[in-house]
Image 1 (cartoon, helix red, strand yellow):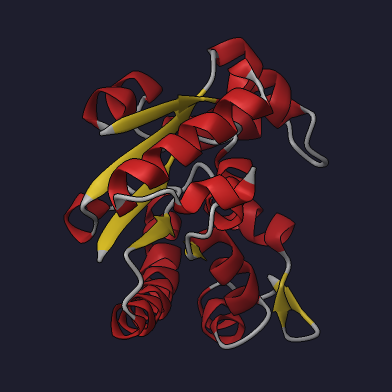
Image 2: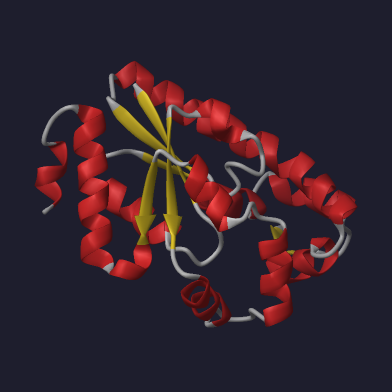
Amino acid sequence: MIILGLTGSIGMGKSTTAKMFVEAGVPVHDSDETVHRLYSGRAAPLIEARFPGVTANGAVDRQKLAGEVLDNPAAMRDLEAIIHPLVRAEADAFLTRNRDAGTPVVVLDIPLLFETGGEGRVDRIVVVTAPADVQRERVLARPGMTAEKFEAIRARQTPDAEKRARADYVIDTSLGLKAAKASVNDIVRQLSGGDRAETSR
């Protein structure tokens, strides 16, 4: 089984690209979705114990949590020490299920793949990218996002140029959905050795 790592900086189009892999018949483990679920479940009391007041009705208030950890490296490390092992355990279970099922290719969608040293967990790496002005426009259009918050998030991420240099495949999402989907289908065909991706067209 080939494990494909999908990553990219904030606003680069990773989530949309992940959906294209699903449409091409490739199982995807979404780290962001897993975090969202954990924030409403078993991670919530652990986070509340470290950051009192950031939960409501048993779920993490992401805005309140962001206020605690952004621009606070020590607090961010504490949060990561709580959440990363939980996400890793779910990803490992996903890989085991698919390996047992004989799945030829799977995707681990990991936003901080390089930042967390996750290269060793995957066989190939796909980086999604876009020009800096496109990235900024996309991110600032998100509800609750500010220029300051965007810069704080980007400062924690490996530079886009370095990610592209370390990737096996690069998908420029600024070229449009059709081009991105064609790139995804090409990658799937190469890695699976067949025409599985044709069914998504």
